[in-house]
Length: 130
Image 1 (cartoon, one colour):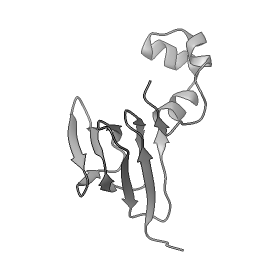
Image 2 (cartoon, rainbow, N blue to C red):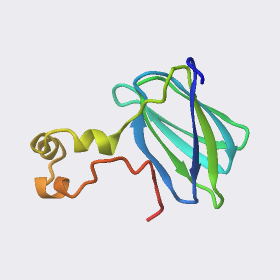
Image 3 (cartoon, rainbow, N blue to C red):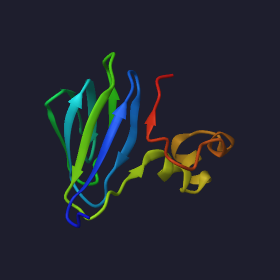
Image 4 (cartoon, one colour):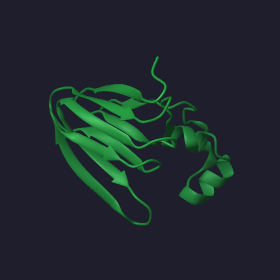
């Protein structure tokens, strides 16, 4: 068993979105195996960058930066995320919001707490096209 590297294989059907998330323990290197993807990475302040990827491309996300990946093609996107860390760690936006006091979330997002009560408390990971 590896003690210095972790990896995740992600498969996304057409139109799917890999939920907004970040990795607290390592940078992420991605190798795109198939499909057409678009990734947006949010840096500190108002900075964000969006990049398109296809088979053979390499993506990079610095540790702790929020990001999401979209399948913008008509075939499955598959990529492997590699981390120089002993284990895979992720904080998803949905999980983070679900474990923040509802009153605080409601005040910051200007929404009703009743809506927050309907949110799942676990991450969907890859969300299908709606």
